[in-house]
Image 1 (tube, one colour):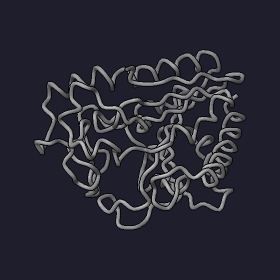
Image 2 (cartoon, rainbow, N blue to C red):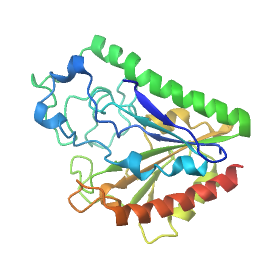
Image 3 (cartoon, rainbow, N blue to C red):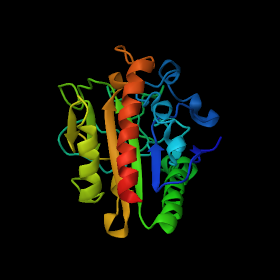
Length: 266
């Protein structure tokens, strides 16, 4: 299986790439038996249905890239050297995690770390190809349009006590403390998202992960933004099933936001 899927534009192309790095649920056959089977049947830390939520993007001229493998195999939005992205005491899983966000052991042997050789192997097989493909897509679009935006999509449970005690805001825009995108694109995004009744937070409690921080180079006309949202925005209250009504409301807001960003970029 390839590490990712690409969904090409079905309308005139625009300079936006949408990335969904945490929607994958597959586990390679050669390591699958090492995991706790009851956990990987429905990997809880998955950004469930985010790929479905954004499947309208190609019809706007946007290229969509989605991950096939679970973040429990390797986390595509973590630093390659597992350097912490935050220093506020929250739980931060490694590049190749050994626990869930709630601290449950992922492996049957309850290992505290994946050995370096195996981390490097997974990096070459799954992590590097995803990141290299993103850069290739960005390069292609920047060559055509002069500037490009990467939009990195994420979701999370409404409550994750190991990250913060309170419920998360409805929408959390991350731009590495305004370093990963131009002020114009940041303002356009915040203003459009804020036109809804949803509570929008900026860089708190998430500033954008490694993807946003790596690919956001506004001085080179390559911008990156991360949008995080609680799953109840498009799933049911149990955060287990896709809710069409909630999802359609969110999709409408996302389309409106992309329309505004396309106007600014083109």
